[in-house]
Image (tube, rainbow, N blue to C red):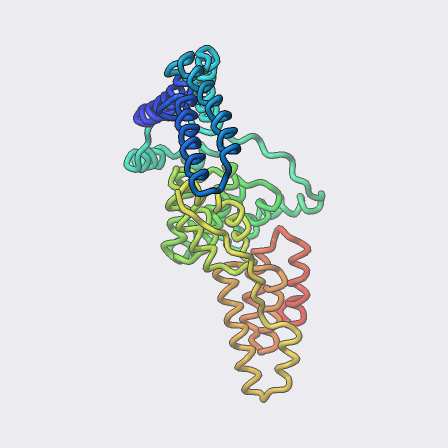
Length: 408
């Protein structure tokens, strides 16, 4: 209501000034003819001064006096005729005043109805936070969120793959504590688009692992929950995200989805802080970088923050063929130290942020060069789970694993 009072007061004041000016018929404190009379009288005095200084002759002075006197008589006659209105017609001024008021007030209302929020009540910060807390308290759980979704379309996969999936489901059903089978089931159900089934399998993974469940396990569970609910972050998905971040505060995907959750409960200020920091700390090839870059500008505007999106950086890389060839010119100790440092940095980044299939393959290859077969095998095993639904990427990584001697 305060907004409308202020807006109406300002519009009325501006309209009043415009109408007053138009109705008076002149812009100054006196009619135009009175101003002209003063100018002409000044001109007569100038003629006398010019004649005294010898600038003009008597004949020229007389001619100028005659012309100025004629103008004085005309201006005086106009002043007598028009009076204080200056001779301006009243009707056009009245019409223009009405049009100006209509355009100013009506145009303002039309513009606000298009770009504003008519009828939207005042919403101070305290009320917004209270509304956000209420939205959190009334958040749907996972089952109710999934119940709103339409039935999933039939999976687009070959008959052979579907038969293998049936066998995998039977195997897991017979061995509900088999973590390897549960992990494969969750990944492959997700690849088929059976997100509810994938979510149930991943819930079982977390339950079987118990306290040993990692931040990535919980983050993947939250991601499946959000996907199964069509992007809606349920109360159960929020709990999974909190569990992931409790175990590893730097977990990238959990931080991204937590920001999404905060946007859904109308806390763009908190979402912006999380996403901005995550964007600053992430490598350019992290999977959440592009989604954040696409949304953070709008989030900043909703949060009332002026924010300039930083330019994209080139992706950091791990050791490649050129690095390994250069290492051949070093001593054995120098070469091992260089490769070990590169491998350690790449491994840490992949564990923290994820990465492309080429980087996973590069890491496995580097472990092979270092002779760290156990690390290469562990990385290959993890990569099979991460890229289970991307056959082409998995083949690239498998080729690197074969060269490292950890895959058939």
